Length: 128
Length: 141
Image (cartoon, each protein chain N blue to C red):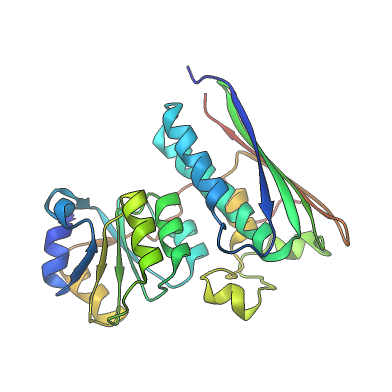
């Protein structure tokens, strides 16, 4: 588990939304993907999402899946509509100059584990 | 005990600006009703995937959301192209998404499987050229 304020330091991040909550937000897991359906399938609540997908659907997905914070990688900057939706949904948004690979490595090295575990176990194969 | 509640949403196909609005509203309503957070997350994910499927593929749909003390149901009835091979569409990784859909982070072939895995009961019926009906049930008692 890491505090979001520690993640900001580790990733040399800019903070776009939620500056005032960084030191009180616990992050339990990490997940990284540009595919929002994979985030919906494999994330867990309380995770930080690292992504290079910078659009409104990233924030919608984070809200739906109880993601605690979003970090845009590779120095990508969110547009105003993304920032205002994140404020409305109270989702902290950070940006890091690091690549996805480096950003994940830095967090993993500090003990932040993956979310990659099915959230429910009622089967994944079609039963039609 | 969760109070009974029901509401319908109209979802417009191709309206990417509003995509996700119905599902986020459903999530907010369930929070207000005091439903357990783990159930809310499952309902929200199933509703969101269903809503995105309508936005990406169909002309329009009616999404009906019903809450009783025992179950949460989401019924989606769309007017659209329908699904020719449901068994294939249910397969993880199978996708007919366009580059535009992929740019939005969707089209990984996880939508329908994702809805099913978050449901306690899931039904799907489809007629090519007419539309698709989904029935999603999540037990909360």
